[in-house]
Image (cartoon, rainbow, N blue to C red; front, side, top):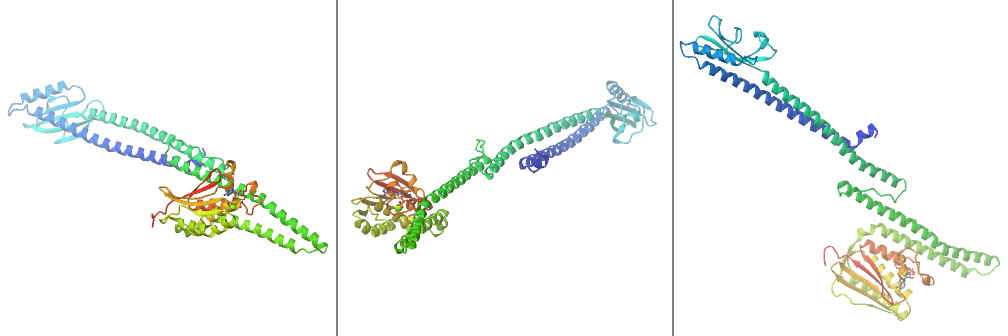
Length: 457
Ligand SMILES: Nc1ncnc2c1ncn2[C@@H]1O[C@H](COP(=O)(O)OP(=O)(O)O)[C@@H](O)[C@H]1O
Ligand SMILES: [Mg+2]
């Protein structure tokens, strides 16, 4: 990856920041621990020097220097290395016993260089000097062991830091690269989609983590987008195709009128035909626009509590006469006695039932019984319009909801093939599921409306 891009990558920046923070924290902890260790080692050395001094000094009995001298000699002999020094000198500075040449030491604890008193090595020595029975006693212990321990601690800490730094940076880079790969996958897929490949989906890692959840939602949005685009493409093609017929008819009528007029004939009837044809085309366009507006969902803002049973009853009442004139019967049964409230637009719902009832009246022969029914269930209200007419063949049951789709045998009836598309748009707006069934004989269309959210108010 390009360096500038790497620095802009969120996973890499997070990993880098986290690694640095971790390494700094480790170093700080190490420095504090090292200081504590140093202080404790120095205190331990002082305690040890003090203890040796008091053990040696305790061998002195008043007016008897022999024991003290013997003790100093023994200690000096036992510690013949360079690690410890012992010195007993008299008031004149003459050495009485010990393993170093006499030297001036201040009272109490102090630190001197081994070289300064003629010792080998370049260690420092912690000494304690005092007066015992008028004589000078000096006991000292080298820093060699303390320094060794400090050195070991420093080395282990140093190596631990190196290992930790490598692990933190390496692990961070590994995790960042993994996250970056997934982001790259999303980026590539989205770039592909932008370029017009709407079938492209973002691959999921399959572990259900947050990136997977977001990716899943993005894929769903892409599904919907491609569905909509495909639908639009289909609709535009269908509309263009279906409007060609009435436009051709209109053109033929106008041509006839021109021809007729040229011969001095009466063109009045032909012009009326032409006007009717253009009115029908206009009505089709208006219906198409209405469906698009409903699908856009703006009318949801006008939703109010609506009594579904009431709406159906008025449709049944208005169309009862029309059905009767057609030699058919229309009734609403069972008619609910309790209010059936949903959240919706009464005008649109009326239009929905009108379209279904009009279809039954138009597409069914005389003697057909048309029945509206409403049932309340746990999932909501099931509103249905049924007839015992010719029905719709299985293969076309989904297609009739498409814009401008009509069964071949219905081509001679009035209508534009938009009635059921409008029904579907209104049902979708209300969140109602549509089922279409074959009643052998007849057609049954059922809409399942969710109940009003505030209950039966
Ligand atoms: N109750 C019904 N019985 C039989 N066929 C029907 C019924 N309702 C609708 N159809 C068929 O479905 C087609 C689409 O209906 P619709 O969208 O309302 O268009 P239109 O009624 O304008 O033809 C109709 O042309 C008709 O063939
Ligand atoms: Mg219709």
